[in-house]
Image (cartoon, rainbow, N blue to C red; front, side, top):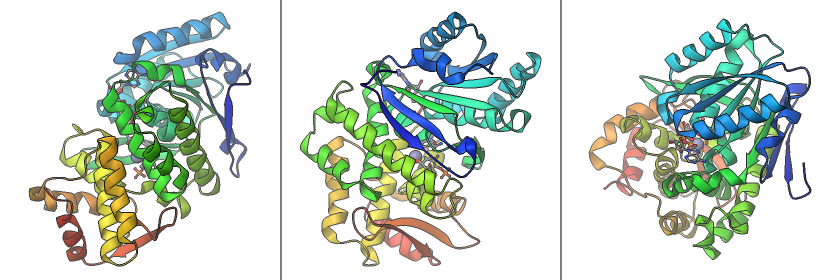
Length: 363
Ligand SMILES: NC(=O)c1ccc[n+]([C@@H]2O[C@H](COP(=O)([O-])OP(=O)(O)OC[C@H]3O[C@@H](n4cnc5c(N)ncnc54)[C@H](O)[C@@H]3O)[C@@H](O)[C@H]2O)c1
Ligand SMILES: O=C(O)C(=O)C[C@@H](O)[C@H](O)[C@H](O)COP(=O)(O)O
Ligand SMILES: [Zn+2]
């Protein structure tokens, strides 16, 4: 690995909780070194849309002496399905994959989520390495070991914590990422700014054009800062017993919107509306100042992320939010801010409070 790479460490209590997230260019070629000598066979999981990248990874593996197979899966949320996991288990079974073999995920967050889930469940756990190719995958989904698939009832309702053995964030892959996908990832970067690193917000405010340029130094700094936030949080609380809930800022409503829209909305777009809602909720109970709540609107609007959602969908959203993993019994729980960089939890026994805050963002 060369000196232009940045290494962000994730740590934890078990030896398998410790790994590096390496950020740089031309990094995919470093995969064989990362897998190590014990691994003999590798299953590369990627969507059809990223076939060329998957093939390039397999060529590097072959050159280094690994036997590799491909599982080409449906794109985006269609990949986060039990039938896709089942297809991958079948490929692993038919090819006698053992506990010393490995899975490599090449793609966005949907791919790292389902491939991570397959790795968590095959033989009760095999090594997985993530090669995220979307901004969202780089700054969020590939780091922290949350894996999952959707069910008919909601988003990520089935999954496991299964940290990767390593993450290679190859910035070159962003060159082909469509602008709306970059924008979606930017919502998670902004989230990290609101919950933990105000410098992220200042960088975005000061560089409205550069943040959208995949080759800019500003974007690289944002990526590294967001990964640093995520790595720090999951190092302290891998299994979400407390601090990790803060990474769910904007997701209680966001996931409900994704489900209501049958996943036609990008994850980050839904989280953007979810953060607007959380800000209005916190403002309404006197926890967030008007200035800080208004800053949500300014930054998300500057980026071009959505700020509102349909007034007539409230009941479906409330039903969706009840299925959020932070809910305890009848108590809905939201990540809210007491100020920028000061996240906390708001427990809401009475949905009328939520309905009132929703009116502020309903269109
Ligand atoms: N596990 C976690 O901690 C975590 C964190 C955040 C989000 N997520 C999950 O991640 C998913 C969203 O991730 P996403 O936004 O990456 O979506 P995605 O994986 O659906 O990818 C978005 C689209 O971009 C395409 N794409 C990806 N990389 C590309 C590239 N380099 N060039 C061209 N096209 C490319 C994909 O094929 C897809 O069509 C959601 O399911 C969300 O729930 C998980
Ligand atoms: O890593 C986490 O923890 C997060 O909450 C990060 C989120 O951005 C991500 O979308 C995650 O998949 C949501 O998890 P869930 O537990 O609410 O399904
Ligand atoms: Zn998210």
